[in-house]
Image (cartoon, rainbow over all chains, first blue to last red; front, side):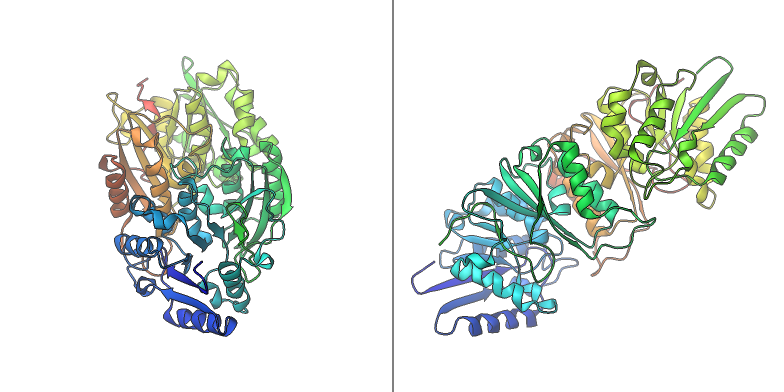
Length: 282
Length: 282
């Protein structure tokens, strides 16, 4: 962070962000940090639309790289999840310059596909946490404030409570991590506490993805798994008869991975920040 | 096949089969093969129920092994897909006896999880094709007759038209194959024509899984990919703007895999049989 201020660049490598949410985020930051230079730069790409995505792959990757490689920007904040970050992996990895390595990167859900690839590349400023699009939730200001608290001040209160400087951590959406397994961008999570969360997936899909994750030999080298919240689960037909925590306990036991309890993360306003790797306080 | 007849054992390693469908399948076989000994043995496990599954994991695995290891049975026919076969992999692999190796195994969709594991184990009688549960479809008799045509007579007309004794083939449901990547049961498909199909998945999910599959270094050693039918695709919000074939062409090009055109497989009554490996005629 430069003396006296911070510049945060926002891009949308997946789905588009509604422009009013950008305005609302900027107002929120202005109210939170009176007299301090906390600059939010929403890249115009955030508001583009190309089918499912906020612009085509080339446009989204270029915007990501413009922000990542900009020496005047301290942090890259993912505007939103949805789907599409993982389509940009090769383009992004091929275009990174040294300026990209010194930044903080914050996002979750679909953003995990790029966070994973950057972590595999050796970046050490990555974190799983709220995004501007969380303002769409009732009470979403709490989540966005927490993200800013982490980005601007590295406030410990923004962190998932079990995160400490003593150990390694990482957090992923279950489905996103499942789709990284067996690719060149599967991150090495040896010795990490792996926190997992999910939203809007049937219980049988959660079960299938947890089985997938815990069957991967490299994932079996984690220090343990913590389960965040699995929310908005559609009804299973027939009823699945087990909770997500029962499933994760089952697959941890079957795979010899330690189950460490719950994690305070999820697709909700209480979603806490989880740094990738070892926590570095400001 | 023993002289004068064939015995086909049916199990349900995933979801349960409705009993009337078993009766209907037996009647169909009786009508198709008058004067021939074509015996269909539905394991009682097919009709059990335990939450999402046709009995718990232990029960389903035991039934699978009873049929697979029975020397008086020539073929193991998966009753139905759904979800659950992949939960049995370790139990099944640990319990197989030499009698299991000489059989034909036929199924598709979720059954691919076990077919893959058996193929990785070196089994050479595996095939992707219709199951008794296809009788639930309008005109489903055509699919079940085709499966029997393959199981009983190895009839070439049952085969996907590009299958020949000249090359290696395999077929999978896209989501099922995606969930095998990076596990010990990912089959070696080097030099195979890989046929893929899907049902009831949003276009963004098909895209994500195709990206996953084509990013896997071992999958990149296939001879090429053929796309079967992707049916019952729920509406994407917003419209995805691309067809499944456009997506598979995109990912094949991006990954250096040859796209070979369409395959005559899918979750429908026209679903043809695709042997795993090299076709062996009776």
